[in-house]
Structures are given as structure tokens and as C-alpha cells.
Length: 592
Image (cartoon, rainbow, N blue to C red; front, side, top):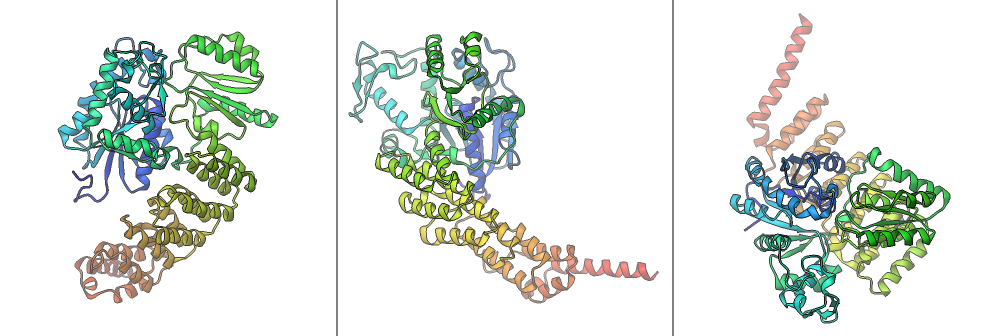
């Protein structure tokens, strides 16, 4: 089945994230990527989760639809619509099961939407595959972990390794990856038991079956990071896993913080920066359950370490005691609500990260080091850091290269940024550098160096085979026309057409109506031609724009240079006649 509609060239993707911050954030990043690639995006959520999503995607052309979250779910307080607000993660299963009650509303709303190319829904919303099948829409599941974890879990399960030993702490070698040793206690409940069973086991199996019946699987990863495990998953299981990450590098809109959420801990980090006291960031995710014993030991370690720290903990199950917080108040802060982790890790004073290694958290710290070295003017140290990562066999150094380039852009050292970018292209290949190209092109444009951006993008497309984002092309087009680089902007439009993007017409129409000549208008109308004859709508828009700006002689000159079928077209004749009639009426009124 094709994911593209022959009657609607603009794909329409429906996104449905699970109601948990760790699952929602990657989907929000994915929505930005889809927009950048020219897709129409509709995102489903619930009323309580809507404000967070709207705040995270300001100004984006995304349709957000609320579905009522089920009420009167046993043990789940009214008004809780996200797992990070649950009193205990022991309530995860009834919460997740309750989402199926949203299915009738989901299906009814889907049928009111314009043609839907595909649905991307979280693995925990397994019932959406039933809805997709019923309505004939391809469903792609979103899996919020790595191919590595999926491959290891599958290999242990299908080969009966989880029931191999009596003791849950006795190690075993994986069949397909014999160099890797695991124990049953490395797995979450219920798979840490020799014979897993129960409601949670049933839920997981339902999710796995639903995933296997889906069109595909989207993974927040990239092939070069874990090629062995991607190949294993695609060879041994279905559906095919598509690596479309890393999402954390997506360029999201810059938004002002929500003061009641961020003001306290950001101000505290700012104070530590002023004091020159490096901070350790401690967080174990919104869903990880930390026992009282573990909390006590972590608190004791932080207290005895004598380092400044910011510790984010779940509201539920906190047994630290106010005495602890009083003792560490000069150098530590405990936060009991969800925070913007990326925002914290980007703060200059945060120099360490203690985590449970959730997949959304991996890689942030190395990226931060590369960024700070580059943005701080330490070019040699930044290069040495990247070389050391490569020499040590670190497979995730691609993201550090991007962060280094971002640092040079932040420091406005575009020559070094461009140099690093070209080295990255040679090292990583064309498929891995589109984000860095977007970032570098935009920085050039904002430094009034649109021609340098044009040369870079043209070189990367024509010589290296890159496919820049739609938004990269649009930004570059606008900046070139602002600098009156009309021909170069037309070249950009040609690159867009050759790569299957729709043309970006509005800035051209605005430019031509203000300063463009009739010859420019002819050149533009020919450039927008998709067949032997240009679109009539382009001519009409140009004529109307000329008239609106009062440039009637230019409109007449343009008309005289148009093909005969344009000059004799009824819509064109009517437009010019209406303008002349208006002039005659105005003259008669003045004479009278």
C-alpha cells in the first residue's frame, strides 16, 4: 500500500502520543520534522494535556484535537490525564487500559478529517491499529526506546533465556549476541520472572501483536548508531523499523518559559552560574519507580559529595524528609514537578548528569561539552574532544559534531562552523547532516550573508546529494529576495522542485509586486511551469499583486509579454476590464 495519495500531493499525518511526557516529547519533535518536510499534521491529545502541547509548538501550523479522557477510572483521581501525575506507577496499567475507551471518539473524529495518509501512534495505544484497519489507513507505531533494547529483549524472549536459570541474578549469554551477558533482573516486571504472566504481561503482548500488524515502526534513532541491532530487528521481526531520529536535534521554535514552572529552578541555576559553582543534574525519568531505600542512598550520596545538585523527583513516593532539604539548601535543590530537561542540560553551569539512562536522555551530555567548547571560542579543544570520541570508538559522535557546529554558530564564528560542517559531511555522509545544514544556513541568513548560505546549500545539493528541509529552502528564499537576489532565489526554487517540494510562491509575488520588472515576472512565471504551459493562477496572482501596489503600467507591460492564450484568457480580460471600469467610474465621479 502506498502512503501517498494521488489526489493530495501534501501528505496528511495524524499523530497520537501516549499521555506521558517521555512519550509525548519525541512525538512533538517528530511533528516539527514532518512540517519541515511539507506535511500536514494533526495531533490528538486530551484537554488536560493540550496546554503543554500548545506551549511546546507555538505558531506551528498543526491541528490539535482534544479527545475526552475516560472518567471514573478506579484508583485514578479525576483530572489526571498523564502518567507523570499518577500517585504511583502501579496505576500505569489501569491508566493505559483506560485509553481504549477513547477509541469511538478517535474513529468518529478521524472520519471528519481530510484524507489521512497515515497514523503514527504510540506503542501503548495498541488499539489504534484496529481503528486504522477499520478505516483503511496505514498505522505506524512509535517505539520510544532503542533498537538495541528491542533486539536484546526479543532475543532473550524467543530463545527461552529468561526461564533458563533458577536465580534471577545468574547471567546468561544472548543467542544472537553471545558477547552480551544479561540477567533476568535486568528486565522489568513481569519479565524478571521465569514464567511471566498477569495483566501487565497480557497488555505487553497485545501491544506487540498490534505492532506486528502495523504498516511500520518509527524509532527515535539513526542507523549508524546501532546498525547491527536495526538489521536484527528488521530481519527477525515485523514490521520494518524506520530510524527517523535523533529527534532531540529538531529545531523547535524558541518559546518563553512558563514562569510558574521554570522560574524557581532556572533562577537557582543562574545563581550557581554567578557563583561559579558547577551543578550536577539528577533525574530518573517520569515513569521510573525508585524505592525508598534507593532514594535514601542517593540522597546520602549527594549530601556527602559536597557538590551542588539539582534533583528532579516524582511527586509521589518522596520520603526524603524536610531535614535533608534543610541541610543541603545552600547547594542543592529538589524539584517535584516535571521540568524541561533539555533546557536544564543546555544551561552553562550544569556540568554533570546522573540518570537512569532513559533513551530520551542519552547523548545530551557529550553534545553539551562539544557545544560549550565551540561556543566558548575553544576551537582546538573542541576538535580534540571530537577526535578523542572518534578514536575511542564512540558511535554517537555524530550528534556531538552537530552540537559543535551549533556552538560555532552561537559564537557567530561561521568560518569555523562551515569548516566543521564540511568535515562532518565527508565523515558522516549526506544522510546525517541536514539538521546542521539548516542551522548553518539560517545563521548565515541572519548575519546578512544570504549569498554564502545560497552557495553552501547549492553546493551540498548539487555535489553531495543532500536534501535540505523544506523550511531551510523557504528561509533562504525569503532572505535572498530581501537582498534583491532574485535569480538566486529562482535557483533555490528549482532545487526545491527537483527534490519534490512544493514551490514557495508568496515571497516571489510580494517581491515582484514591489520592485520586479515585467521581464522578472515572465522569468518567474516560466520557472513555476510544471508542464508545457505555466499555471494560469500564477499569472492572475501577479496581475492582482501589481494592481494592488498601484503598478498598472508594469502589469500592462507584463501582459504584453505573456503568451497569447494568457492575454486572451477570460479571467485575465475580466480582471483588466474591472480595473479600467473602476478608473472610468472614478474619473466620472471627479468630473461630476
